[in-house]
Structure formats: C-alpha cells, structure tokens
Image (cartoon, rainbow, N blue to C red; front, side, top):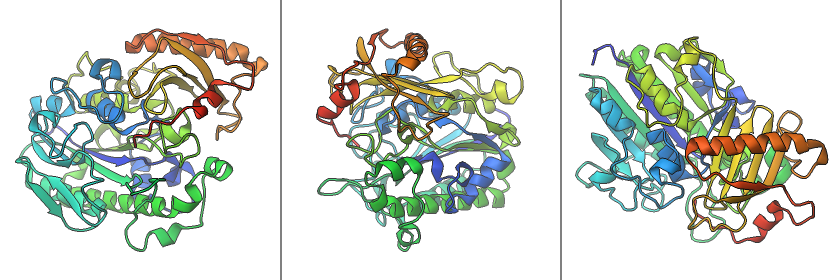
Length: 455
C-alpha cells in the first residue's frame, strides 16, 4: 500500500433528515460545516437509505450487500461473522481500521470480538441508548472493558476519534465514527420520542421552522423538533472540530470524509414509529463526500443509496471492488469514465410491514405484503400496491395516486421495473396486485394492523 493512499473517515449519524442541511433549504443554520463540505466536495442530492431501519441499513453500509446476502432485515439481528465488511477490505489493503460509537449489528454488550466486523480498534457499544445517557457515554474497548467518556455524547465520541487519529499516523487509516444522535431516546412510556440536545440547544430551535410534510401531517414534530435540531447542530459542530483536527495534523488534503445517516425521521406521521416506511421522511438522508477525487465533484443528482457507498469508498482508495458487493461505485461517474447510472433506487422495508418500493426522480411507488408478519418474514411472494406519489407535483407526498385511473400506465411501468430490481437483488420475484378500488386499500389495511415496534 502506497504511503500516499488516502485516509478514509466515515462520520455517521442516526435518523437525520436530509432537510436539516442548509443546502436542502433549512433556514436555521444548523449545518454550516456540512454545507461547506458539500460545496468543496461532492454533494449527493438524492442520498437514500435502501432499508429505513437501524440494523439493516448498517448492514448495507458495512457490506455493500442486500439482506438477501447478509440475512439482516430487521433490528435485533447479528451480522454473520463470516460476512466481509469495509474493515476487512481496508485492513487487507494495509490500513489501520477503527470503529467508535454505535454498532447495532450484534445481540449483546459488550459486542463479542467475532461480531465486530473485523475492525482492529474497537471503542463501541451495540446500542448506545439503554446503557448510557447524553452526558454519560459508556463504550467498550477491545478487551470488553467499559470506558466512560466525558462530555456530551456527540463530543465524547468525536474526541475519542480525534485522539485515535492523532495516534495513528504511521499508515493509512479507515475510521468509522458512528453517532446515535439525533435519534430519539428510550423512555419508560411511549411515545419514545424525546430528543436530547445538549444543554441550551433545544431552546434555540423550539417553535421555529417545520418541514412542509411535518407541518401538514403533525405527528410529534412540533413537540420535539427543538431537541432534534439542537442535536443536529452539535453534530455539525463536532464535524467541524474533526475537520479542524485533520487540518492541524496536515491530514485533511489526503483524507476522504463521508458524512451520511442510516435513515431519516418522519416523527410519527407515516406509521407508529419514526421511520420504516417508503416515504422521503424515512429514506432520504444527507450524503456528502470530501477529499481526494471528491473535491470539486459538485452536485450528483442520480439516486445513490448506502449500498453504493462501500464500493465507492474502496474504489476511491484504489482498492479493488469485490464482486460480492451489490452496490455500484460512483467513481466512474465522477471520473467522467461513464455516464451510466441507475435512474431508480430500490427500497426494502421491514419491521412495521414487509414492503418494497422504487424511487425515481419523479415517482415513488411501493407495495405492501398485508398477510406477511414483519417479525418473522423478510420477504413475500404476494404484494398489493400501496402508494404512488408524483414527486414533481407533490414533493411532500400528501396525495396518494395509487388508485388513480389516469396513472394506470405509470403504475404498470413501475411494477415491472420493481419486479426486475427485486430479481437483480436476489429477492423473491413476487406477484403484485393492483391497489383495490374500494376504500379498504392496502394503506388502510396496514394501519389496521398492530405496528411491530422496533426502534
């Protein structure tokens, strides 16, 4: 491995909406550092999670593989120890690798060494929720010893990352820094929704700007957005400190930094939780890359999912992309070597329902398996059309066109394409029934079922 090989840092947040970014229209000045990263580097305008739930989304990002390969489709599951992750590929290429923060791909704490995804250095926790608080961060080291880090949790984990970088300059490094903020925190009674911003930050943003979908649909947003925004603000400040540290160590110019999140947050407007639906408020996330070939990349408007990021990072570091990865590297597009890119993104939903969906630039189409048990079933051979949104005319997804006679041809095209994408992903090739014409639709049937909560 050349000494000029780029370092790679992933700054990963939990449940962060794309429209917390100033570049996406948020007027509150929450993300000046992230916005500056996007202006310098490459801003993926339509960054998406392929599975809007913590554990399966993280499995996609660690492996570049669908649940059809990893078997991870819901929370509470373990990434198989034989599955190769980014840490394995970077490690085999001579990189020092480190994981700091929330893992959520194991079943116990401390996370057994065999379930840590192959990272050399470990300072993590499987959940970072029940066992620690915003001002009491408890993680576990390589020897399973609990380590209590000082400060607000975002700062505590970021400080630990900066210390590790400072001590690891003798060879290229791959660092995965995984925050739990701005995810809502566990409480004793539902709704489990309070967002714990650092002291004084909630008050800055209470009663201020509300995204249009939340303003129209309500949910819990008006009560909790202040804390949510306060957490995002502190994350951005931590990002700025990390970038400052890289600059002070003369590492910034040779370090690729990726900022993204596992999924978004709909604040109880689409189901009984905060994600686990096909809507933008569940699947659309910030996605920005800086450093190396990403500098000057501008705005990428093709839909890019977390599944595409592992091959992209390996490719950018000069490491061969393994054939088993099912995502696609963005580098040929950025290098102007190829203009080919899929114009749609496949979405798989689990836990609240078993559903599949497709997002194009204009359309959002999804199907639901009303007889499947999301606690047990990862897929289904039978689906019913659930949603169709025209994202050009209805960007906030307030008008469901799934039973509109005028859109029958669009639904037919999207149905065929969804089946094709499922076949490519190795999923069950299903039959998809048109949405029923009566008032009892797949949507109302879904809402009548118990919601299998697993935040």
